[in-house]
Length: 64
Image (tube, rainbow, N blue to C red; front, side, top):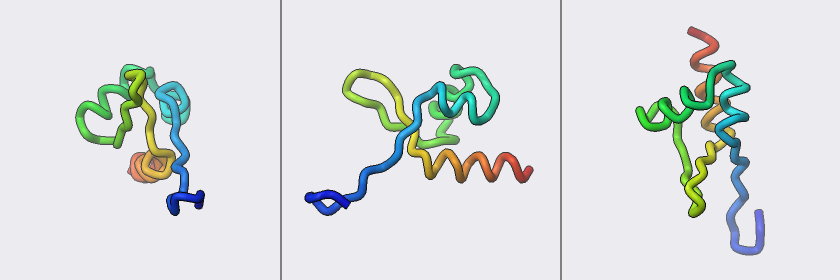
């Protein structure tokens, strides 16, 4: 936790998520648009993905 009382969240890039799943980065963007994975859009327009949610999604997909 930091001085403001909240813990920083680990964020992944689109490329990192794509490598984790073995898919194209466009596929990751499509999953986010479809609401399958959460996404945070930065002021720069770049997207970041909460690592905990992505890992949980990966485990769900892996178990199917």
